[in-house]
Image (cartoon, rainbow, N blue to C red; front, side, top):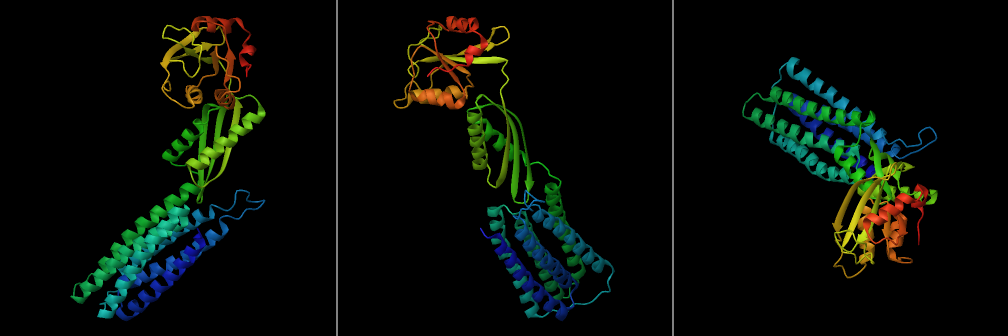
Length: 400
């Protein structure tokens, strides 16, 4: 989407609004209309700033290797400050300027009505464009136009009141001050959060953490941090991986980056700090023929699976569970589905009697860094006892 085009549109709209309100202000002498015209002039200047920000946002250089993304947020802060200045000028005139009785004609009411309708329509489309492009500058500009809809409506009400000899001009100007002040605070607060490297919102951080944890080779998500930079986001994560080989670790980090980009649009850069898992325990998975712990001769057809967590320091069993095979009734790709399920259960080693050489589960376990070993044991206790008798290094071999 060409967001710069919307910057030009905003400039054109502000020029039209300035002209309309200037003509009505000169002819009527209304303080409220004059205030709204000043408001339009400020927005015209900030619209030019938005366009400059959009043009500079994606430029990178040696001095700014991440690009000038935050220029957009600088523009948002400037917009907020200028909005406060506008509010101050309006309040000063409303409270201390000499009283002037405004002149109201039907064409003036029509002009202000048009000036109300234009920002209403334009803000709707600009806000949609800003959200689609995730541009804080466009979103801020659209919100400012929404404020114009309200303030110009107040001006119209003041002129109608003046038509009926009701002195509402100064009160309308003060209402405009409140509305503009609220908008200015929102723009300033949002822009400063980004400039001060505030974290991404909690919902997005949760989505990123879940996307990383979904990678089968990830043993633990140690830390995830993220920050905004204009319409883009930067993410850093520290993880531990089951895989030891450098090639597999690099492939895993690439998959993690792809998962984060898919879960959260406009992530410009993902930096993964990966370390091999430091094991204090090992979790074994074994296909069982029954709940009594008899090993099954089959993998995918096994009705149960035992999950046993063993402390490596002394070989003690710290946890043992027997789970029903959730894919026992599957007709196709049963072994692969079971293998993926064991990956989700965070198994480290799979002990089994069946030879799976060349079959799908072998590749699922290999990609996840899970060790696959044959055993001649007949029960779950005998299989775990065999592992205690082997050197710890032997548990790392993979038989295919």
